[in-house]
Length: 138
Image (cartoon, rainbow, N blue to C red):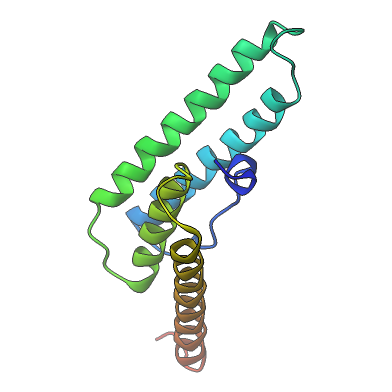
């Protein structure tokens, strides 16, 4: 697992709406919890501090919760670009948990794809607000 995953990097896909947004927020919560738990665990020495076993269990539980949420996200049918972005973020995090799955060039390609998807979603949100912002609510 990479240091970024241990830290629980938050998703930028939280601008989606609906059930996928809720799942995305839940995944972000579990990822952040896992990151905090990992930092606590990593600061303890298993040989010196018996709390290390409990700290590792807390981290493991957070990862399990995040994986269950990612599985729920994968079962949802995306209805928008933002839903697709939430799914991609969940898949990216899930695959990232196993550093052996991707070689370096594939990881770089997927990272570029993720950034492009985020930019596209951001542009779509901006243009939707610009179009909607010019009209008055009747």
